[in-house]
Image (tube, rainbow, N blue to C red; front, side, top):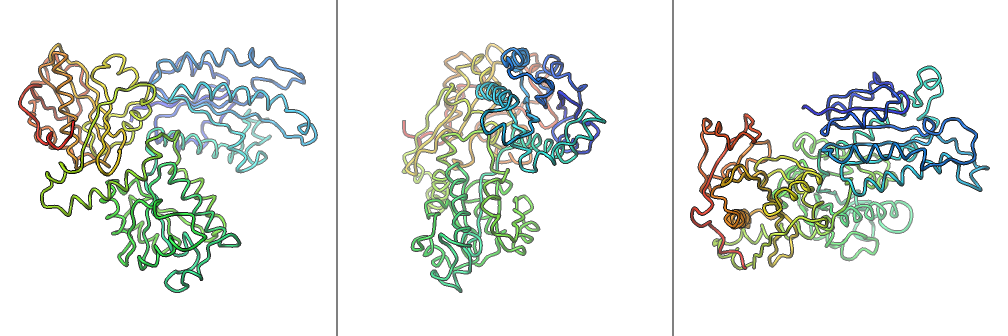
Length: 556
């Protein structure tokens, strides 16, 4: 890992404290001298992660003024920040703490000066972050509220080390920074698998019957209802809800359909495995049906034996350490960081329906002996969509999340993609697909760049796993050839860069008529701009070298 992370603060941050160790997972950490907040903005490399922690007292001082010119105080800082973000390709994280001692009497009539300053700065930063995908803002007052200000700050550390924070405060700070970096570099979990008995309702349906389970508007029944409300909220945000229950399937659906306390509906559940098999095997089956890897699954079960077995048999699954105290469940589910996203796209909202369609497609396809005729019958339609302000976030999301059908698995940010579009607008596009199962939305991304006057390089070709099996890759490749032909390119070079998850496309190039390029040919000047690794295998094909298979299944 070659990433560099520069930490700077308006006051000392105890760089040798072990709390900073967790950040090192994402790069080599260095600390600027405290107070040198401008240096980390001016001198940072474009691919350097910048983290700044600002305590407003260091900007405002201990003055007894009754008014501050906030524009004047923060103008230089905000201008430097804006300038530093222009060419950045790595995230910048700004954390703000007001250091304000709340006085109930004084605050009952007016907002304190520090609160005003914090609101001003946070508002300015959030406005900037809304137009810059690589800027992240942390409100430390809200973050520290979890443990309490008195616990987060330490007067002894301040007077003897010029550090405002206690060891616990540093731990909370670094954990928050870690969460931001983790989500920037890693995608959120996609699937939440829930048990039924004693999980989404209290009691055992097979023993207590529909009238005997705890689910309703009072006591523990309200807790289970609130838990369902939180699960449904996640589903509305694009999390795929599934059931894995050792139960009689008819009895489970009877509760869904006839118990007045149920919040979740059958339509909220994208797939289920309600039987007497072990749950690890059931999650494996759900993974295949949905086309989602087990490392994107989160498993919630009240039974510690089931959880231990899942951890042992399916270690890739994120098994929640569910507390015995059921009263804490709704809040815990609401605050699970594994599902947190920086933004919810329109495509996310449609995701449950799309994955439900995926499961139906897989089932129907498996039941026919003539796959090609079946695919012709489902009214497949694909479209190329240009990347613009309304679609660029989806392009970046696909680039960040797609692992299986991804030739090179190179991650690009919104800023990167925007730059590509300006440089190569005619060979950078998205792909959408629909069929009788519904509109699957934007599911593919293509980016090609020029190697020479007649040779183009397939830098990125990726496709969401939820539409696999429809031969959309053939349609995409045909669209690529049509565009390259119009631009006068004669041949296309592609690279397969093997990862742990993309073996699915290992034979893609040979399957579609490409020939492997021998290593000695890579010395040609046309290849000098390529990033060649020990895992790189290159292929080439003429743009007009015959027709492609499976195009007949798509309707124009």
